[in-house]
Length: 222
Image (cartoon, rainbow, N blue to C red; front, top):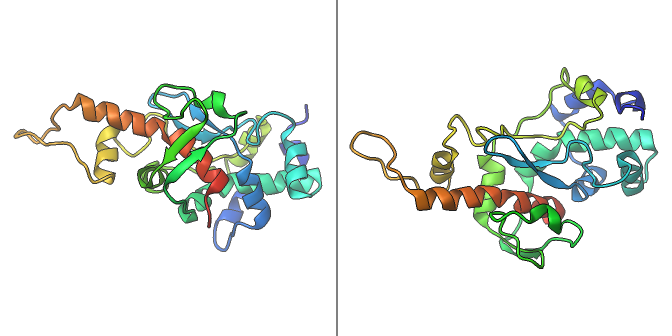
């Protein structure tokens, strides 16, 4: 199988994200079709599938069908869309509401904390949007890293640190609680007082960012 690097993806693609880079309708169309998985590292976090960002099948052929471009042009456009996900998340808005995930995606969201009903229903809230936009620390591949990523037949999707998804703390719930304006109680010794119920609630909310991100890519507006 030829690598994406051999498919003509220019390593300067990452540089398109500096300065005047803008998401165009073809970028958005590709983002609408992206599929999210759970990053199985330590705490974990949502991430667009780095090997098959557009789901099962030949990614280059799917990208060409979505955009109406040649495969080479579509591959370049998809590379830009992967890198442009951070800009998309910065600009996107979506109303709190009850949404339904497509049936073919539902097996991905079967974990006990993901908050997805058996029929694919999920209640998207302002807290989910806040965590995705201003909580999770999204990292974008640099132009220097891009050739190596593409040579491994991976796509340069943005990703958070699976161990410390919200900042410097491995006890990530503290940062979540501060962002959501419901902080933990601080004891006389200036340390956070244990609160197992709050821990569990915030852990569940963190895992709900998986279906929330999927729905945001599908339905969010700029």
